[in-house]
Length: 233
Image (cartoon, rainbow, N blue to C red):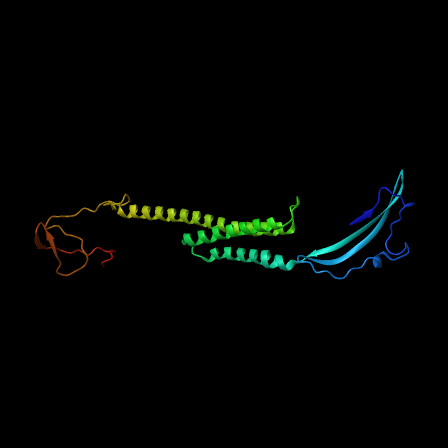
């Protein structure tokens, strides 16, 4: 608050705090403690200045009241609800990633609630051009809530990609199992051993006494020869 006169110089009117100029300015102004709904009186300041112009000298008196905004209302209606909404949005991190209805409902609800709270708060605050501290707080809370919703979208996308990869591996394994397995009769490094089909020709067999080998639809006794160095010796 300022008190001055531009029409009368100090020769006509001399403003000062107190009964005279020697009075203490801080003691000149006093008022009883005031209780305001949204503010608390922290203190006050008094000052006087003298402005010199071509028309003369002019005295101006200044009085400033220091107010502190009461945080109780904003703590109970803005700060605490915003913190709880952010914590509720984190609950989706503990839900199963396959529970899409629950996670979508929780994420969208918290985002809309945070948007409504921010709009309501800004409608009750003064319309100023600069960014206030509460704007930083509400903006940070909104970013946290929106990030939890984006996290669900990212997890769902990655889960879908992993499911597609597992399905491709399963189909590839089934195709490999369904293919007929062909075993070669002889390897390239070994040569087939001739088989003697004559009745009187000796056959090289493991050592078994009295072995009967079927040849050409009938059983005939054969002579068993022991080959030195064979595993049957």
